[in-house]
Image (cartoon, rainbow, N blue to C red):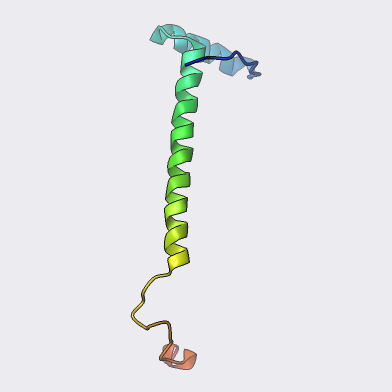
Length: 80
């Protein structure tokens, strides 16, 4: 996969901590960022797929056993 450099501005304390983490894990900040972004993209894409599936269900409608007609009145539902 072709890669491209970017400029990223981070708070100094976060940058220090991520440098230490990368060194401890024997990896690079770039590799850590790539992993985090891949995970985030995966969650986003999963959410989008689920949203699209549910949009189809909502557009189709759900069978509630009434044939689309209410056979009761509001006051009947709220009788005590």
